[in-house]
Length: 309
Image (cartoon, rainbow, N blue to C red; front, side):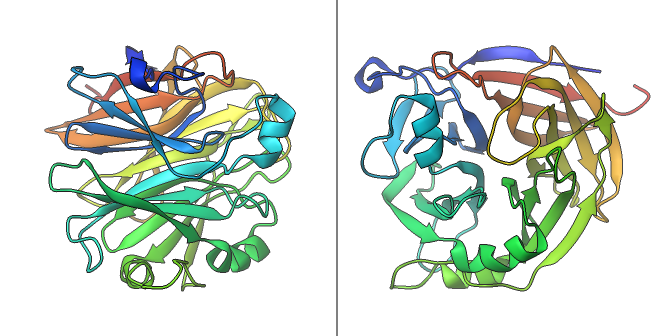
């Protein structure tokens, strides 16, 4: 069992505190320097938080306009950004960038965002929208219930995580060639990710009371292993939400085999994960989705100790 240690809540500074004054539907995360970047599936901005604790978070606008406050209408129109990955330096972004992926679960959920970073990891320049529909078209043929929920940079590949649901209980790793992704993002025209060579590996994470454990995010370790988060959410499709009856953290080997799987306590809907190796230990930073727009998402720390420790 892994104990979650509360670190804080995803709240914004007073100057960015127009309702709501917090980020609730936390999803993919990236740590860059002292900055924690958090995408939210039902917001039009990126949450940027200071890990030193000197400043509250700010909202960085990604898309224009506003979403309805009413829950059903908001769900229908949201962009559903679910995964975030840090890209290494490449010709159009010499100090690296962030790339956010939408879930692809609906036609209006196929737009990503590219945001440059400076040497310190701070935001640099203007966010640019990225059309993901050419990339997602063949994936939707492979996964009728496509639902990209996580992403990680692992060596020379970007790994996307397909999330299982009750009606489509198949988790998968979708590996994209990093060089091809970076080449596409150097375009001077409207940005898009084309159909790319992919390598797909299905992963069985088991069930909790008949509900499949499903990927929500992952982070790569230097040796090629992936540390992932997963939840058992009692829902049959990729659109609706359901009660979270369990959550776990696991480790996948470079061959995709599950090397480790441990449940977390207390149960929280963990949606984003960062991991780094600290000797024999793996230190984790995690965010949770409150599934209630009136409540802030949580920020937690945790440690994976060596097995048998």
